[in-house]
Image 1 (cartoon, helix red, strand yellow):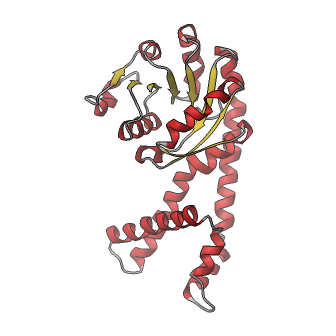
Image 2 (cartoon, helix red, strand yellow; image 1 turned 90 degrees about the vertical axis):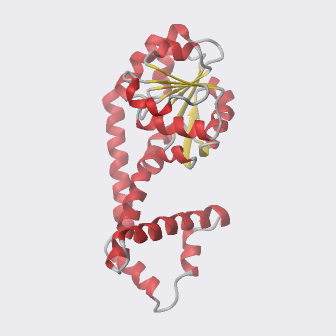
Image 3 (tube, one colour; image 1 turned 90 degrees about the horizontal axis):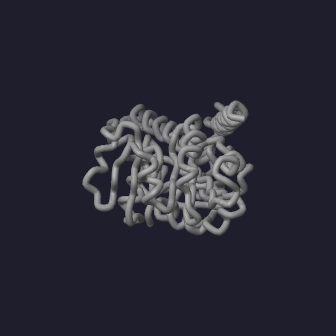
Length: 266
């Protein structure tokens, strides 16, 4: 595939790494105002670094936008005359609606919104996708791209704000939980490096149990809790201290914030 990433910042770099590592590209254009900051991608076959969005658009069929929300509108205005009938526009921009994109480039364009997370750099992203009417015929293409970089799911656009909190912000939430587990392991006697190994691989194992078995989390919890055992004592203490409610309240707070960002852009 001939792909361009317009705006190769943190997320753009993560997407680029995933695409390169999984051989998902024929050519890949990476754009950024200061290309010195993405020199790590120099030398890869088929990869071109440029500060010129025009060059990237002209030489690509799939355009992945990973710029700041405040920059996307002007970029779309600038490239609109260059768009042809085969271009697929994939936006990763928080709060920038399909309707707003259609108002700039036209409803006849193939428009997809994607919400990946930074685990895309290691091929483990959970990516949510939605599209405009025309873009429905290109959802499979978007899935083909993002399934090589993890797992994707098609949802309605009105759920994209929530998906951002659960999947994109969710990486930070899980990192904090892993860090807390690491700190507890250190307090229990492990060295820092060992503690983190224990925490992160146990987290990975828990997720893979659910992915592989398709069970509800409580079914797996039941397998490791026994009457008057240490696991149930620990779980109950965490709940007394508000573990579940704190996580839920934090995610709802993030959701309220992301909706305020969307309102500010209207």
